[in-house]
Image 1 (cartoon, rainbow, N blue to C red):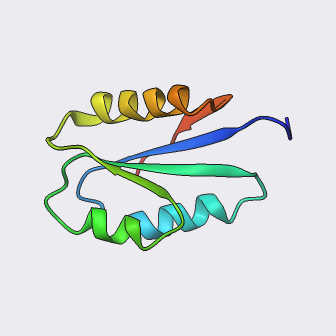
Image 2 (image 1 turned 120 degrees about the vertical axis):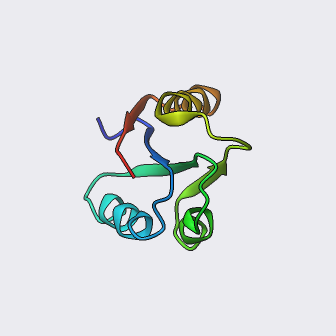
Length: 90
């Protein structure tokens, strides 16, 4: 599958203490992937911490919950022509 464009979707709500480590572990894998953090209107510094990484980051204007955050990620994957999209918890 080396020719497939892969997106890892990381929905995140109040994950300031974990988000950078999670993204780092994903990017440390041998796979050629893009990472998208969908910040689900966190009340902590999740957004700021995610922006310190190499991940793509989008922030929802209000909390949609896990389903809405994941759906947002899949819509992003479709809009940007990713072949494969997977979700990993933040």
